[in-house]
Image 1 (cartoon, rainbow, N blue to C red):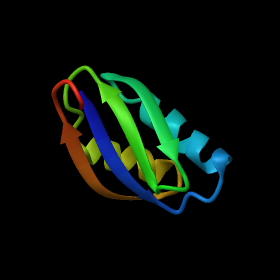
Image 2: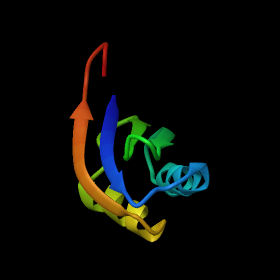
Image 3: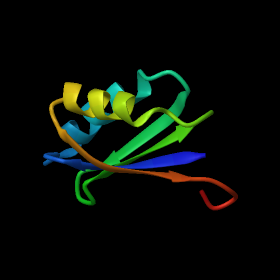
Image 4: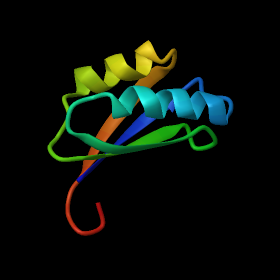
Length: 76
């Protein structure tokens, strides 16, 4: 299962790495990939991570968190 997060304020690969590191520290997050060009991050999770925890992790990394979408199933 994946959660897709809109992240604003990332300008480079270093910014994306900071977001990834912060998100990977959350419980149940197996993998995080941030893309500064698309202004988003995708986390692979064991179970859904609460939006407030995701929002705090992104903000703690120094960026703004927007919409959070849950993707389930084979393609998600």
